[in-house]
Length: 115
Image (cartoon, rainbow, N blue to C red; front, side, top):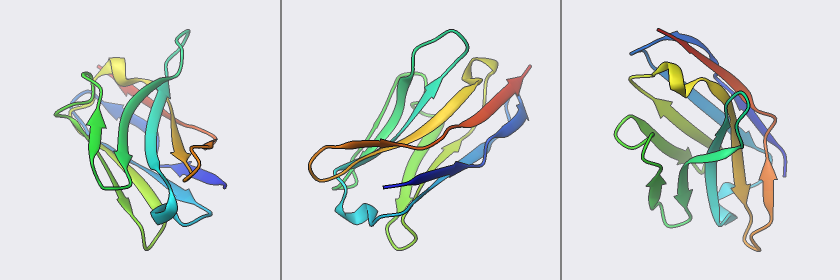
């Protein structure tokens, strides 16, 4: 499985960005898809996850501002990020877990939010 993330960039606080992750496989067969982020000097941490049944989970920092979604026909996963804050600055990684729970990672896309 190969994952290609895109959509990162620079934004002002309060603005929005939409991240995309294109998968080489059929995401409809995967157990879950997720977005993680890693800020400077920090460990990689979960932001949001969507399960095979469409259920979603958001960490507290993302809840209410970010939305994870997917398009199984395009084999793409998205992260809509609204009301961005400087603390959202990080490298964002898409992640999938196949049906046997094997994880795969994309290459990361940088998001920089200035105040």
